[in-house]
Length: 291
Image (cartoon, rainbow, N blue to C red):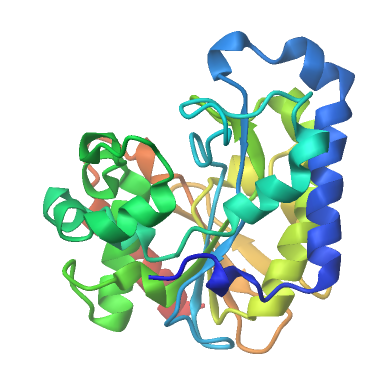
């Protein structure tokens, strides 16, 4: 498997904005002063597109942020300190682009991890490589379990197939703690302007038919408009959403681009005791059908 080649389709302005984002965060006094040592540095995320994603027809999934996504090249198990970033921003971007969208399927359960360990080793970039260190998307991630159920229903692909290759995937925030947790307000504040612009370019470039925002309304469209991606997206991209207040699905609507349907949900980790991930997926599919 050749990695990275699928993530070259953004225009030059995307690379420039991403590099600007890295430098803005690295030079922020708040980030330098407030970053806890137990974060083990910062990590970043470059959006991924699967080999089978169809421009104008496919599903785009949007999450909140990542943890432990990419290691420091000289210090595995740690991210980057702000002081590192300006001098290695180009190599950070190059490293982030090597991941294939098929990773989520290849790491979906012990059987898949063992089956695909040689391909996983190529992008996992750990030396020595230990199969026990590989993140198991089936057992550890309600996010990917729900996405798998949605993809399986839409494309009729089971867990033995590279189901995640049918989608493109991004996150609202591109820079986050390496070790654990979502970016706090002071880190979001230093990147939201660039992250909104990057999301705009992603949507315009990939032109998904369905956009699934698995972040919770409080992340995508919080009351504080300063942090609202929905309010900040330009009108030609911003979807027209009908908001709900009770269900797992919190908002449904359509984008300004032709036949683009949007569904905004709670994050799957916040399911109630009487809810199942199967029901979550059913509600998502029903919402897309009725947009």
